[in-house]
Image (cartoon, rainbow, N blue to C red; front, top):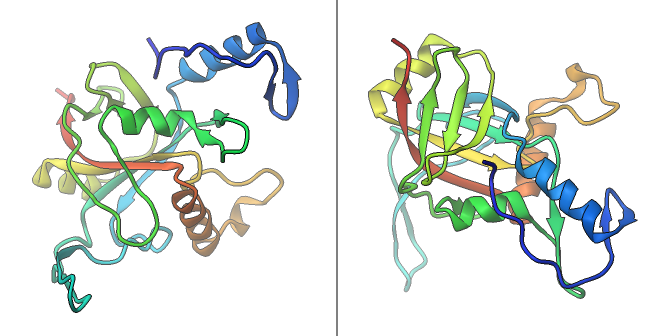
Length: 218
């Protein structure tokens, strides 16, 4: 179980939380992070001010640069945010590190959700389950739990998820969900959350997809 299989490492020295570690300690750290699927999260809608996703483009003219947008209809698209407790950064010398949990999500079919124009597409094989205990579980195409969150589900969100049949699922370490260490919760404003969200998108740490919604409540 877990998000991904361990990969063989070629270097003899690594770092965890800024401290040099040996290969065995690194493998233990990777396993611990990969096997943790209970994450932070929240549910919201497309028009959330802490996301500011903008409008859906349905056409782009290469010659003029004109973008045709979809008028309305997306404001109440349900969204679910899945933010892991810990990052798992890896990179080769001279290259920018990549967050491996998001990388695995992309490898399994979610799209990388960068800044500016971003392709928002369906995620074949992925499903979002509302469990009997009210938690939301994001499952990868292999059927295993990739991320799970326990958040209040309001009737409007549930109704939107049921009526549309899918949810915009966002996964990444910088979604603006968790309050930063040392910051009072009331100071973490929508603007602060938005800046965090945009920073994560800009660094390539965010994966997203339109995922079918499955209601497991009896």
